[in-house]
Figure 1 (cartoon, rainbow, N blue to C red):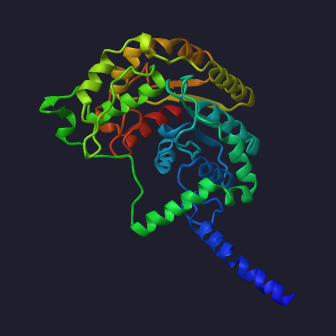
Figure 2: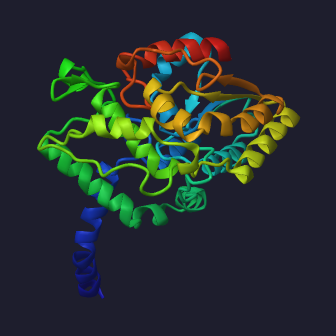
Length: 341
């Protein structure tokens, strides 16, 4: 029997070593053994919240995920938990709210990020909340999840290679504003980003094929910008996700019933998105019924996307949707949480 147990222990040793490495380096700090919060992936944000529930929460996609929470607390005068994460769909954020409320019925205030893009019926990402709930409640489901194991190996590789975390900030140079000596209507990367949005906002073939140079920069930016400016509402496939909008309105009613202060915020977008995507495709007009419904839902609506566009210089934006974490986000934090407070 002793020999059998010794052989079994020896056979299981590689698995034990791998699990120890996984626990030490998995990117989401699922087990709470490190000081870091574990990044802004959904499982990391939810696990961090469950470890330290707060009465005030931020929900939404990547546009809400990068706030400096110390500055938020300084501006708002109280602490907030950020449970936003990249790629969150509208339905996913709604389900996330109800899950968090079930875990902590003492939630008092919610800031919920929204945009025309997440309201778009053509923007369909998989709702991960059911799987995430299982992983939160069952460590084995997390330990043996292929995606998280691959992510762990990536983290180890990055650490060994000395690769730093990528921050959404950049310093821009004059050559980003011209092509072949001629001025571009917007920064080259903003034109490229706007063209990316056409994938969920316009019919196939609305734009020519993008061409990139050896450094990965858009090489036909002027052509792309001209094509977007010439687009028409007939080429749009944007429509309001009525089912998701109705769920958001129901959430507003739920919050009112439970005495939860709900703020729905539409973050500002860079001017290139309005000029190259929204206006040519008629999205600005298509959004009006949804905006009217939101105004009547009883929640506080802070609309910086349409009604109160701050018209910031492009250097305050990392790309068309995301505010530069160094050059714009502190300003945005002070504006938003002064209003919320």
